[in-house]
Structure formats: C-alpha cells, structure tokens
Length: 299
Image (cartoon, rainbow, N blue to C red; front, side, top):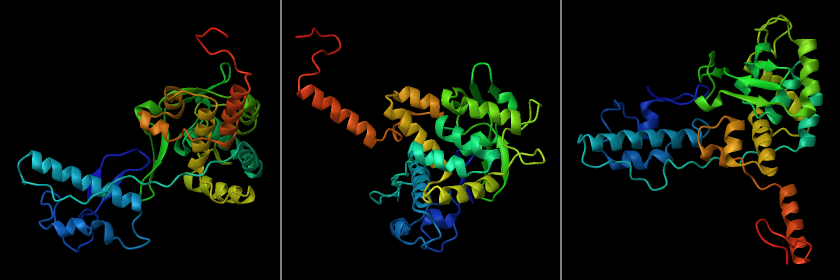
C-alpha cells in the first residue's frame, strides 16, 4: 500500500494495482513499471463502479510524482508517465441550494440537529467541524463560533478527532444575525452546561456520529425536494452566497478556512440573482442613470 498525505478527513491510500493501471503486476513503488504500455493502460483498466475518476486521477498524479523524483535522483532516465491529460482534475460541478431550499431542509431535520444545517450553510462549516463543536466554542457575547477541531472519517470507517483540514481551518467566525436566535435557543434547549458539552449530541450526551448525522440529512433532503444535495453542498452553497454579496477571495478564504486562493475561487459561481443585478446595472448605464464613477467627476 502507498499512502499520500492528505487532509484529515480524506487520507489518500492506493494499492500498487491502482498505481500501475490494474495490469496485474505486483511491484514495489521504488521499482517503476518497465513498460510504457502499463501506464497508458492506467486510464482504461479501472473496473466500472470500483474506482472513482477522481481516485484514478489522484493515483496517477502520485505515480507521476514518484517517477519525476526517480528521474531527478538519476534512478531512471525518463519518466514513463507520458499520458496526455492523465491526472488532471475534472471534478463535476457541485449543486447549489437556494436560501429557500436550505430553510425547508432545516424545517424537516430533527430539532436537535437543525442548527447544524444552519451553521454549515451560513457559517460555511465542514461536516467534521460542525459536529465537533462544543459549548466552549461559542461566544454568546460576541456572537462567534470558534473552529479548532474536527471529526475525520478514514476510508476504513474509523472516526477520530483531530485538527481541522488545514491550518487555515482554525478560525473564529461571526454568526449571521438572523440565525443568532436559533443558536441561543439551541444552547438553552439541547446543550449541557459543561464547557465540553457537545453542541450536537445524542440524548445520552455523546457526540452524534457522522454516519448517523448523514442518515438524518438523507431523509431531510428528500423531504426538501433536493435529493441531489449532499452535506458538503450546504457549505458550498454558503460560500457561493458569500461570493455573490461581493466578498473578496481573501474573505472567502478566511470564511471557508482555505489555505489557497485556488480552493476559494471554485466557490465564486455566477448566480442568477447576481447576473440579474449586473444586467440591471448595465441597463442603468445605458439609459444614462449612472453618471458618476469612483474617482471621476460627474459630467
């Protein structure tokens, strides 16, 4: 097995068959495939339904990095990874929920977990981050939520507590005013007095498992009429809403806990409402209603 260091919530582990294109060879990673054809077959030999396209791309990039290192160390003369376009990220566009759809989903969630959906959408928290919140993370005076830990689920299904996905994931977020009442009511009704009491616990006081929370969400999204909406899409939608309000890339990075601008930019989608606002602004310009520009004198 070969492990690539990744996020706490999604460690990347590949076997040699994945790295060599399922050609049926047993090799150690330090011995790269001898034949170019082994690599060329990589993108065409993954059994349908067994390996996701993104997993194949990740595995190929890791293999290419290993080969390039071997070339740099003079272990081989030329990298065998020459397949054009292999390893490029082609993730499908994630769905975006409307504010009304999120509101509907909140209404059909079990009351104990409604605030979690609100925080994922309006504070753009990851699933592992929101389920790891404890009373001590909430500042009721300043209306903020502190993120400094997260639950992570390995491919084997093991659940562990650790730091957020990236160092940038450690952050303090202001809770939007319209959900502050829901936050206060939740604390009074569902959270114990201890500083370490889980914000989203079970009736026995233990933290709800990510799997059980997913089950509750699976029912809610069906009732809300959005069976295609995954939990992460709530965060995705919230960041898209933030971008539509005019948030800068730096602001999106901080809000979302992103370590790079590239990660934040993927959330800057053009929404229909924002497109209509731009169209209206252009119409105003054409009709002469917009006469002044920043830094210029009005004519």
